[in-house]
Structures are given as structure tokens and as C-alpha cells.
Amino acid sequence: MFNIGMPEVIIILALALLIFGPKKLPEIGKSIGQCLRELRKVSIDIPNSLEIGEKLDSRKEMIKNDRDS
Image 1 (cartoon, rainbow, N blue to C red):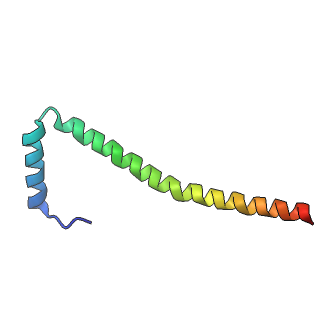
Image 2 (cartoon, rainbow, N blue to C red):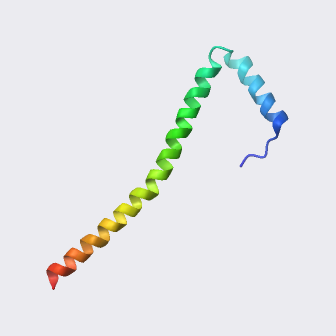
Image 3 (cartoon, rainbow, N blue to C red):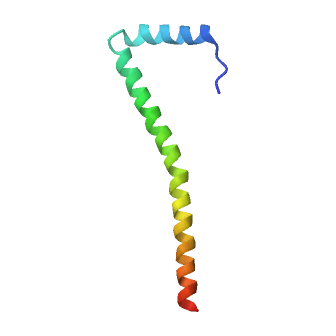
């Protein structure tokens, strides 16, 4: 995704440590992890809900066709 290596990651982490401090950094990491976890869960739920919606639409269409017959 991002083409960064280990030296760049170390520089970013060092800057984050300088900016936020050692007490705030674990809290920030935890909140970022929770956000990523929620994003991953939502990205999985969206296709599942679309599949369920398509199944419901097809079943509604089948019921409508049965009533018309």
C-alpha cells in the first residue's frame, strides 16, 4: 500500500513519541487499533448485507410472481 521501509517507520514513530509523549502514545495506538478493527468489520458487513438484500429482493419477486399466477 504505502511504499515505506523500516527507517521511515522508525522516524515516524520517533516523531510521534516526541509530539505526543510516552504517556499519550499507547492511548493513541489503542484508539487507532479500535478504529481499524471497526473499519474492517464494517467492510466485511457491507457485502454481506448487500447479498442478504439481493436474496430478499429475489424472494419478493418470486412471491409476487406466485401471486400473479
